[in-house]
Length: 212
Image (cartoon, rainbow, N blue to C red; front, side, top):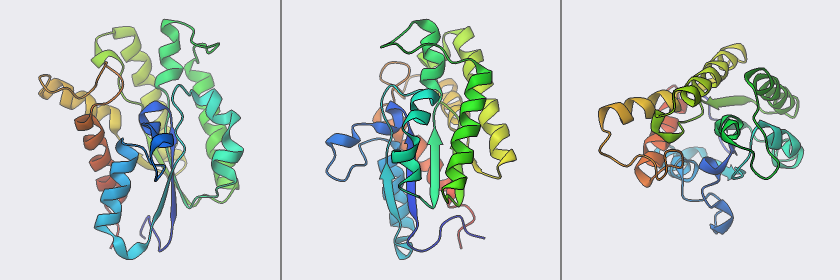
C-alpha cells in the first residue's frame, strides 16, 4: 500500500529547521528540507498531484505546537502529516528564552501523544515522525543524551502509531562523524544548505520507498 495517494495534501510541522523562512517564500515552503523534499517528491511522482504545506515556526517546542495545533493542523486536515520537533524542548535546558523553559522527556512524550491523537482524530491518514536533529554538533554530552532520549521516544511512538519513521538525527550524526570537514550546520543546530539537502533526500527516500 502506497503512503501517498493522488491529490494528497502533505503538511510539514516543526520548529525553525522546518520553518526555514517559509513566510518570506512566495510558495510558503521556505528554503529548507521541507521545500527540498516537496520538490523532490513532486519531481519523482508528478502523476500524484501532491500539495505541500509548511507550518513550521522558529523557536517552537512541543508546547507551542500544541497551542497552535487547531489552526495549523486540524483545520488544514492534511492527508499526510510530517512532524519534526524536539530541539527547542531540550535547548531550553541551557537557558530560558522568551519565557520558554525546558521540557522534560515525560512531558515531551505526553505532548507528542496529544499531537498525534488530535491529528488522527482530525482525519490525518498517515503520520511521518522525524527524529530531532543535533545541537552543537554533538559536543555537549548532556544535551546529546537528552536528544537521544527524545529520538528514542519518537521512534517508539512511530512503531506504536504505525507511522513512517525518518531517522534524521541518526543520519546527521553519521555524517558529522564521517565528514566533519563539511559544514552540515551553520551554528551546530540550524542546517546549512547541504544539511537540509541530506534530510530532504532522506525524507523522500523514506516516504516514497513503498510507492509503486
